[in-house]
Amino acid sequence: MTNRWTLPLRGAHNPSTLKQGTTPGSFANAPDVGGPLAFSSPDTPGMPAPSQKTAWDFLPEGWTRSKETGFAIAPKGFVPITQLEHARLGTITPQMLRVAEREPHLTAETVRDEIAAGRMIIPANTVHLAHKLDPMAIGRATRTKINANLGASPVSSGTDEEVEKMRWSVKWGADTVMDLSTGGDIDACRDAIVKNSTVPIGTVPIYSMIIGRKIEDLTLDVILESLRHQAAQGVDYFTIHAGVRRAHLKFVQQRLIGIVSRGGSLLAKWMLVHGKESPMYEHFEAICDVMREYDVSFSLGDGLRPGGLADATDAAQLAELETLGELTERAWRRGCQVMVEGPGHVPFDQIELNMKLQRTLCHGAPFYVLGPLVTDVFPGYDHITSCIGATAAAYHGASMLCYVTPKEHVGLPKKDDVKQGCIAYKIAAHAADVALGIPGARDWDDELTKARAALNWEKHFDLAFDGEYARALHDEDLDVDTDFCAMCGHDWCSVRISKEIVEFTSGKDAEYARDKAIKSAALTEEQQQMLQARGVLSPDEIHKLASKTKKVVDAEVGKGLCHSDFVEPDTAKRIQKDRLVQIRVKDDSAAAE
Image 1 (cartoon, rainbow, N blue to C red):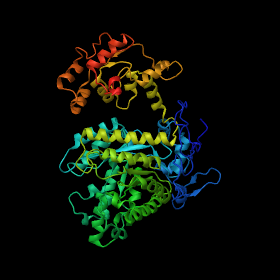
Image 2: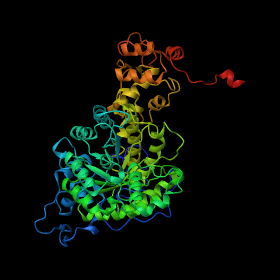
Image 3: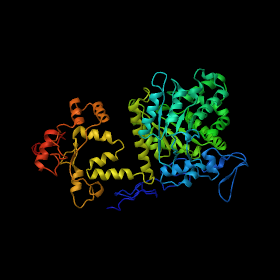
Image 4: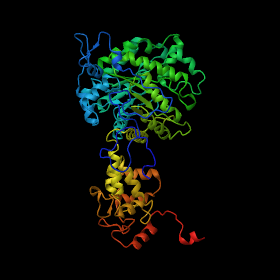
């Protein structure tokens, strides 16, 4: 029976270091780190092949490549600044070493080589490195990263609140943060965020360029001055919407929702007013030279991304993507690191094509995508609609996912919205890493599974991404760590039954053994707020859980009467029936009817 089916194994790593459990592992492609695929999904028929070109094919003028070492030879007197330049010359920087420490499945040499090929970036402004930045990498050979957006608007928030949101987003897993402020003291806000951040900070500089002026008054001098100022502050990557060209605008006319990118719409207006090509495109090399001075990475903006499913994968979006491929080549020739931004609203069936077309046109440069949202009709829940698409995007090739919060399309995210967005996207990123077979990606899951099998609640919550919330939900029904939970109760607990079957290994890991039921600690203030927001328990019930007075199951000195290790089964059943949430099941008499 076990050999009846041929499983589609393609040589991917088992994402569990110890190959625990009975699953055969990942169905992804065999790893190709050092090649164009890295960690990748198998292609659906009709997908474009990956580009055979890399950043090595776009060396700066005057550079050559040694046939002996494979590394580049720069003109005499050249001083490298960017991580790309160092990598091309064969140097392993302290930042590359740090990335290898944080990505244990990669060596420092592999990190260097992936950067040299343009498939990985380390967004690390030389100024920010002098503050608190802890270097990280973005690329499909690394684990999937997530970005959190924040920023003051003309009608909401300010510097202190945004700095706190930055810290909060990092706590909940953001690998980078973008300051998208459009109101308040934008300059002070940006400066404070950079100086206090341990993660790379990105911005969209055109927002600052038009403060106090009309978009049609934007000049090259203003562009370069603004870029140099933000680079000197320590911003690690810039979104530059240089891919929006005058010839593309005709493709937008019949869209249901036009141009939804702020940067894209502003530049479209500039081109229409002046009847000229975008200054970001025309003067791209000058922009590169400013960014190179501080090793600011490009995040080539998708100014014509679709704002609804009806406009996805259309002529405007694809024309811009082709231009982004050209700009990637031009940036590499100037020594700049590059990642490319991707679409925000895409039907689920079109996600793979979008990811793999970018891989082809942009020669494997890291893809940084917003979502994508896979449906448009759930405002208020777009952190969910988008993290579904984000999981598929990462599996099919995206390197970093830009989070979406519940406030997307309706307002500026507040603190809890930031948390919800980060968690949704950590789920997406982690799920994709497991599916791709990135070494060690499933180790965390395996440990929690063993704790769950052993009914070791304390370990269960210690290992959970948000253990505080999981514990609060558990204690909402039953604030004693018993050998069952309130979903099934004692008699119906399949995990407890599996643990008791001698022939099963389930629940018998000595590291997770537990000897007796224990009462959980009093609710923290944060947990109280969580349960108050849910509205299931009354204020009095929450107060009891917070003060730990009389227990709902008469638990004292670490023992609960409903725990079968300490009482007769009939007593446990009585406590369950009287005091715990019950699942409706038909009794024998009802069944007879």
